[in-house]
Amino acid sequence: MTQDATATGSGGVSPAPTRLVESKRVWTTLITNTAYLPGLLTLDYSLKAAGSKCPLIALYTDTFPPEGHKALEDRGIPKQRVNYLLPSVHKDYSNDPRFYDCWSKLTPFSLVEYDRVVQLDSDMLVLKNMDELMDLELDPPSAGASAMRVFAASHACVCNPLKKPHYPKDWVPESCAFTHQHSTPDEAQTTGAPSTAGLGIPNGGLQVVNPSKAIYDLIVDQLNSSSIEAYDFADQSLLGDLFKGRWVALPYVYNALKTLRWDGVHRPIWRDEEVKNIHYILSPKPWDENGKEDGKDETHKWWWDVNEARLKDEAARGIVDGF
Image (tube, rainbow, N blue to C red; front, side, top):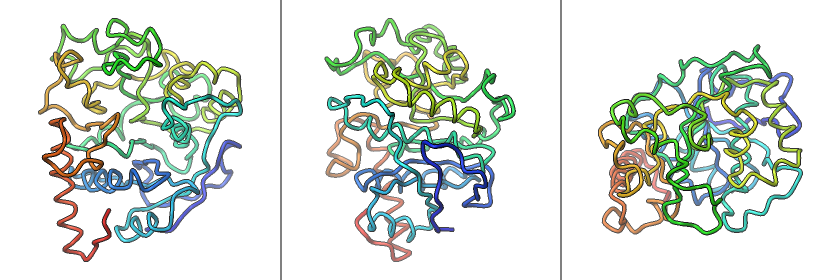
């Protein structure tokens, strides 16, 4: 199915939402422009190659252009319109403009037409089937605001390996949940550090959600509060603050930030063969480089291998649009 569906914005949840696909369990990814489109298309291809039984839905905003829509339609990727979420209080992200888009990644909490939504960033690559996330135990929507297992995610790495000067002063290795696992690397492959470990901030790249009107209303209220001024990392700062200690920490393998693999960061716990989903945080993205041999990060070659397989498969089906 490739038709569009209109989702709700910051005003709340639609009273009678309609599912875009037959499955009640879906992956979603946000797309606002074509800069991330090669990532989205390769993410979709990698999910299918890994044998996922659940479809990926592209959540697009009004900024997404016609050529992007055609690319999704040609490949049969379902797409659903969502409003561009922004807090009522302006937060200056001029040092990291990407964070302006990140508020809209809170939308999956509102998609009550589905029983389970797993939100993925478009700069991810699935290496192994992770459909088990569709069955991960979370509190049901009926738990409302009293839920203690609101969502699941992996921790944010707060080591600041690039030493960005505008990052918070407490973003140092000693404050990082992953650092706490260096002495137990075997356990780190299957168990996340407690959600309260380190600074207790989830990474927003992968979120496992049971959509709930009550939970989404809490999020919207927070978006309209003055607390926003303290949220240096948009959606993930909000979630970590609003639901502190009330989220389920996943092991890094489900959201393997490429920087964790770097020497001096979290090499003690990283194992290539265990990674299920790699997250290409920071710039450049693999598709911003001039091919497989251009990138300096070894993991970018993994993306290029899958992307080349995607392009070959699409060419055989007559899809050659440059994305």
